[in-house]
Image 1: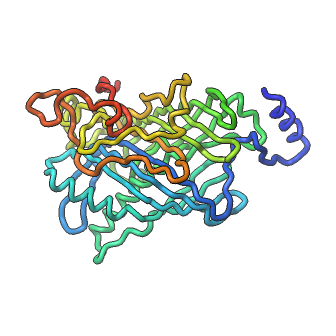
Image 2: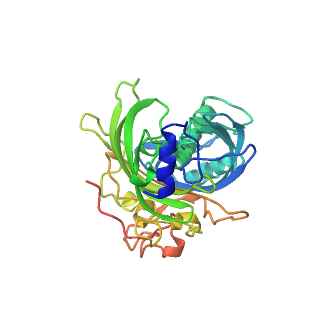
Amino acid sequence: MRPHTAALLALAVALPATASASDLTWKWDQGQHRRYFMQTGIKFQSNFPMGAAIKYGFSAQDLLVTSIVDCEATELRKKKTTLLCTIERVELLAGAGNAASTEEIQAVLDEWRTKLTGATYTTTMTPDGRLGPGELDGVSWPSENRRTNRILNGMEQVVDRLFASLDVGLPKVGSAWEDGWVAKNHQSMMIPTSSGGNGMNKVQFTIDGTEGSFVDALTRGEGTIMEGVDANTPRAFSFEMDGIVRFDTERGELAAHAYRSTGTLTANSVALPGRRPEGASANSSPITDVASAGGVKEPTGDVSKASAGGGGLDRSLTRGGAYDPDAYLETARVYVLGEGEVPELGATGPMLYITGDAADPASGDAPAEDAAPAGDAAPAEPAQE
């Protein structure tokens, strides 16, 4: 334990805990802005409905959302800070799990990109990094009806998953974080749902190293969640998660976070019909090993510094996995952007799955590393067990 930390703990015996420069605690000033690169990739266990207001719709089996978000502290309270986050830019790639045309997918994703660009997401954050429920605003249609309400509900579920990477439970003020800590109920082990759910998870943080004011920690979590508790056929998932966190004690902010989370249906849950069989070529590749016009270059930033071995971001955490009809897979990452930094977000449109079939337009070698849509171009992994 560092001497200055030991002294802090000694004082904490007699005095109320107060944040110091060495504590892992968020610091927001009234009106302060922080801009983030956010990216979330999802392989849905149950196809996710996406639609446009007038016509077109499809069921997404894979979704990759990449965005730049500006969060402003609009109200400071003792236990939490209200954040008004504006989606400056967003791009979406999606793969259909049903018979949808390229025209349908493109039209839907274009509308989602247009509607979400400039929209706001209001949430709260505690000093120990826990993100509260969020509300999506600024999305409207000339005529609102049940269809547009369903679309808005789906958009909010997706944006909830995009912001999940900002939810990182930090140790209590004055505690010996050098020895690691445990946090509960992280948003990294949840699923997009409108039917309600409950559960519990636990995340173990292990310090991986320090560099100046930066503290790197590895995370490993497990837990369960039951979706659709009020439905006739609720589904229960058993979750596992691995991740990397970098926190800046001087600025009082999360510099970077990446995680990979898998929820597997428990034995008493039934996989829903309508999915492609395992091994089908239309979904035989990881969500990030996809080809698309424009691609997405690997963004630079503090996320590359948080590592398990000092050699850069553990690339397996930003890579998807092969299709499993009984599992939900989510990979996500976030990092704070420097002033004026505008990373490449890539394109919006249908995913072209790499199948290895010479007759398939997406066949051939995986994309080069500097053009992989989610920052990785490793070969497809075997199906999860």
